[in-house]
Length: 232
Image 1 (cartoon, one colour):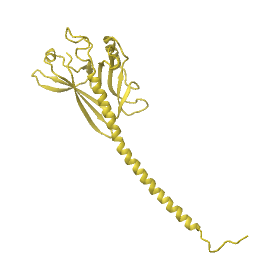
Image 2: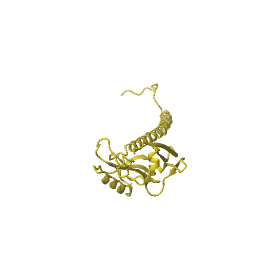
Image 3: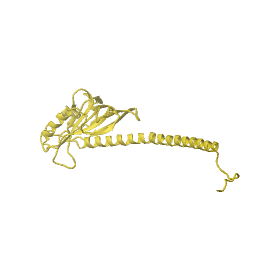
Image 4: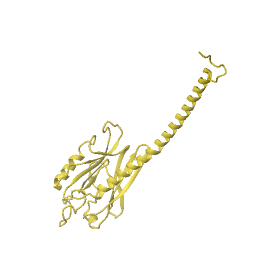
């Protein structure tokens, strides 16, 4: 058996330990760098996702408001069904309306927007959109909508946006002097459109201001004014 050559090269135990230590330090530095990149990516993506959710919520709400139709019960005499004042009611924390879905021209659907907590195991507040079943009779649809407004929002409907903690609604009101001002809605649901026949005959535009208080990453209030087309 041939003896080992004393002049052959190799690694000593000390050299191996030093190499392992250097490798560990380099791995730690690489992991910290990767973690910083991932955190930076998350901090950039979070506002982007929040902006998309907010845009989608605004778009859905405006679509519903402009698709709102009246039942004909409060329309002036001689107007066809659905051509009267759109059925849009609101309170401090809830918005309810009747609409004609695009996929069912002869149907009615009730829609309710409100904020609820504890939905689907999530304790954070969410902006929720709930709908009734489709009805071919306007009176039945209105009755279903009134029932839906009295039911708790937890676990029902569709979550439009998470992190919306407070909703505040205001309607444009015209005073006796002909001046306009925002009136914050509170208490029970009330009609968003002017109740005065004189105001309706003068074609005064109705408007609704929607304000949402949002949690992180916004941490503040956002608002939008929606002008509502007169149908009287």
